[in-house]
Length: 220
Image (cartoon, rainbow, N blue to C red; front, side):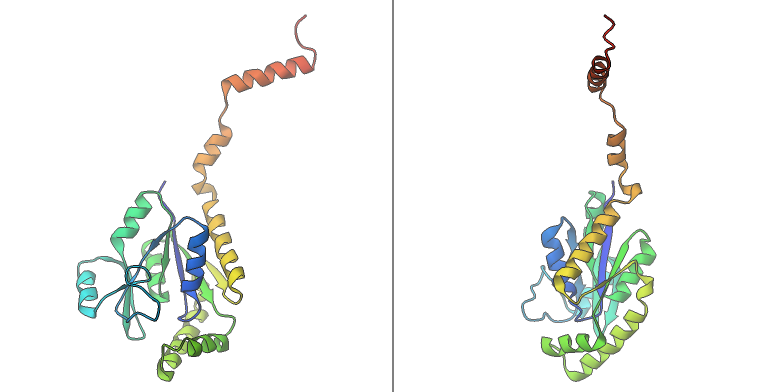
């Protein structure tokens, strides 16, 4: 069976990377690494958190049709390389993308079966606090991120699920519950249903014999 595609998105600073890391520790998913033209933040590693490239490199791959989705966000390009995702899904692996909101909506248009999970902060004030204490953006960029976040939250109804990232462990637990529920949908449980209907002839005979004996039906 083809794998299931899960897409995590949400406003910048909402904690997508932290939730994603915890989720990947606790369940088996193929994590598709995105590509971006923004510089790495402290602690981020090329080929682990993102593929960090310059704009000409990104645009060359885009011209070749090499992205499942792409978007420009606060002056930087982001995209999901198509080939690794398709290979993993074809192998039957469930895939997780962590991408920006515009890109997530593109994925939904191209792959309606994708499950979109939207992370929201407990409030815009809390989101601003996180962005300020993260210390990676100047005041103008923070203002732009907050304006973008407000638009994104107002469009949360376009996504399949919403998870509030207030207490980290609760957000991770909610995220894992969504994965489990989607994996248990009837249309994805065909093999289990087939096994549930299977009959073992020797076991059936043994049980019939036990029933006859328990009811005195030995024929003597």
